[in-house]
Length: 350
Image 1 (cartoon, helix red, strand yellow):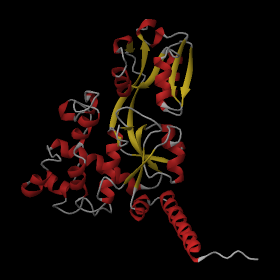
Image 2: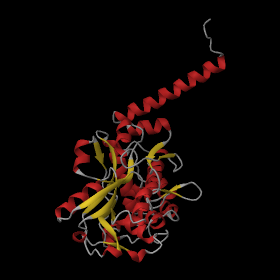
Image 3: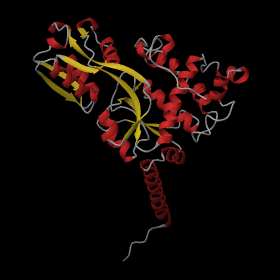
Image 4: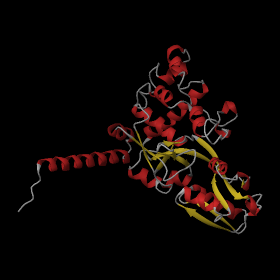
C-alpha cells in the first residue's frame, strides 16, 4: 500500500522545503557577491561570535546576552542594513571556523578581531575592510621564570590559539630570536587560559589588548608579565567574500560614520539635537539630512543616524566594552582618534 501524506504533514513538509530553499537561496546570493540582498531578504544579519569567551570583544554575560566590542560592531551593522540592532543573529564559531563559514555563506561577515594578512587576502578568497582596531601581538609569561624578553624563553612551552595569525607570528618571532620552544595550541580560548594559569605553559602568545584583560582578571596579576617584545602590530578588520565590493563599502562607511560621530561629539544622547539644528555639511550628510549617504550604498539615507541613536559613536562603544565604563579599563592607546594622539581617522564624507 502506498503511503499517503495527510494534509497537515504535507503542508509541514512543503514549509520545510520552502525554508530550506530560502536558506539555500540566501547562501547562493551571499556566495555570488550579493550579501546585502541576502541579508535584506532574510531579515537578519549573521555575524560572528566566539565558541566560548574572548574577553572584551565577544562574551556572554550572566543574563545569556552577547556583549563586547566586536558584538557592538555587529549590532551597528545590523542597524545600518536592517534598521535595528536586534535584527542580528550571533553565530558562535572558533577561530579556525571563521573562514570556511564565510566562504560557505553560513555567516555574512567576520567581525572577530581578524588580522588583515597577505595570505588571507590573496589565498582565501577574502576582502577586508579598513582596520577598525589596532593591537600588538605579544607574550605574557609567569613572573617566576624570570623572563625579561622573548630571548629568555629558551626551552619554554608557549600556549597559542589554533588557527590564528598569533600562532604563526609567535612561532616566526621566537625562531628569529634563536630560542627553542614548544608551541601548544588550543581550539578554545578558555582552555588556553586555564592551561597557562595552571602552569602547563611558561608563556602565553596573544593579542596585546586581550593579554592585558586576561592579566587583569588573574587572582594575582603581578605574577604575570607582559613581555616588551612587539612581535607584530596587527590591524583588525572585517572580512568578507571576495568580489562583493558594495558590502565592503558598507562596512568601511559604517566604521567611518562611528568615527565622524566621535569627531563631532555626536552621541546616542544628543544625536536628535544635531538632527534638529546642525549647519555642518558633513554632519548633515552623515545624518541623512542631505541625501546621498544611503542612496550610494543601497541603504536608507538615515542609516548612520539610526546606528548612532541605537549603538553610539566609536568612543561610546569602546568605553562601555573595553574602556572606562567596562570592567577592563583598557586605555584607547593607538585606537584613539588621530587628533587625540591615536591612529584612527574617518574617511572623507563628501
